[in-house]
Each structure stands twice: as structure tokens, then as C-alpha cells.
Image (tube, rainbow, N blue to C red):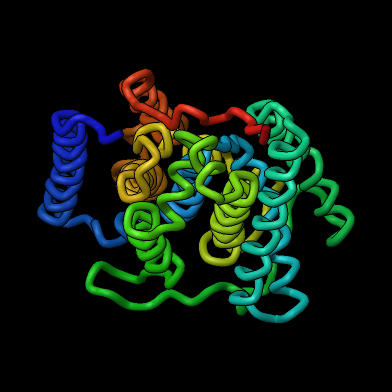
Length: 331
């Protein structure tokens, strides 16, 4: 069932206005002699893990499963990615290992929810709580240092020069993945079956496709994308690990999913807006003449305030698959 044309138009207008406001803001910064390119670079870095996690969860929820454990996946895969990078002496391999770890977590989550018929929301929260305790344990077990680990600079994923500044290849990949995910869901037979598994799983079953396989595939793919985002936070952005490195970004990614109505391209746009706000917060905190005027703690609150406002504005106005969060039992 297609959304009303007026609803899609309003959402497109809202996004266009937001992006136009950002463009005007950047122009004003350039006009007064500040460096908006640095702000864009930081915003794109902050966008990347949000976009990867949100696009993966869009695919996941289209199939009818809900995984709110993205915060936990980001935490665990960040450690897995750095550990793999140090073993193989390669940041790129570390990203791959992070994605594989995320895929494994997504697969296990799917098995528990699809075959074990576990409550998906409770399982997701359990994953988040587990990661909060498991990551400090891993830091001690692997590096014998609680709470923080800094790895050699050579393991960082290199950025490339573009007209808008230095950009990570993973950021470019995240944008491409969002576009491909949109095409995959709406232009392929498998994408049609995934959407049907979330709307009418019994119809998919009658048509000869396995609902359980579709949901497990979607969960595994969503976990892999989220895992790539988790590994990127350390290997492509921060250059180290702290035990609370995700800092609520899994929940912000979930807000992107809610805002987008499970549309990957809209999730990408939402991730950019949230990422830009986080980049702005970092930028304000270090720019001379600005950091003295704007309170530091208020600046750090900005991404979360924007998240609350956006979710409050769209909650109840988005239509999600009718079988979302409901286990399917073959008769």
C-alpha cells in the first residue's frame, strides 16, 4: 500500500527546507571568514555510522523484524573491528571484521526471534544491556586496560580529497548503500518478497517463499551494515575506543528509521541532518570566539535535543509494516 502523495510531498518539503537551511548556514560561515568545510567534513563523519545502521534497520524492519539493539551492535563491532585491524595490520580488514561481527549478531538475534519467538523489543534491549557490560570486559581481556584503547595511527582508514573536503571512502560507500538499498527494496523480486514478509507473511508463504529465511537474511544484512558503522567509528573517525564510544548513536539511528518511515534514502537524509548537528556541536566546541559564548554542555546536548524533537514530531504519523515485530508461525 502506497503512502498518500501529500504525505510524501510534505516530507520531501521538510527535508528540502532543512538542507536549504544548512546550505545557507554554511554560506554565512564562509562569509564571516570561518571554515565551513571543516564543519561539513565532521558532519559527514558523524553521518556515516548513523546512515549505515539506519539503512540496515530499514531493510530489517521491512521484513517484519525490529532490532532496537543497534547501540549494542555498534559497541561490540567497534571492538571487534579494532582487534581484527591489529591482528591483520589493516584498517580495511578491520572494517570487514566489524561487518562480519555485526552480521553474526544480527543472525543470532534473528534466530532467537524467528525460531525462539522471543519478544523482539526485549531481545533488542537485552542486546544493548549486554554490550554495556561486555565491552569493558573485552577491553580488559584483550588490552588489559579498562575503559579506553588507542591503536596505531597507521590502522586508520585513509580519507580522500573531494571538492567538499576530505571524505572517508566509507562515507561514500554509505551513500551508495542507501541508494542501492532503495533500488533493492523496490526494483527487485527479493526486495518485493522482503516487503511482503513484513506486510503479509502468510501470502509470502503461500507463494512458496520462506518467511523465516527472508527475515533472517534481512536481520543479518542489517547487522552487517550496523557492524560496519561500529568499526568505522574507531577506524575511520575517532582513532581509538572508549567503553561508551557509541554514545547513544544506536538510538539516534533508530530515530532516523522512525523519521524515514523505513525508506533508505530518507534515512540517509535524516542521518545527514543528525550528523550535521553533531558536527556543528564539535565545531562550536573548538572554534575560538564561539566556544567562549556557547556553553560546552549545551552544545553536546544539541544532537539529542534534535532527535527528541524530530521523533516527537513524526511519532504516530508513520505507517510501518502490519506484521512488524510479530513472529510468524507456519501452519
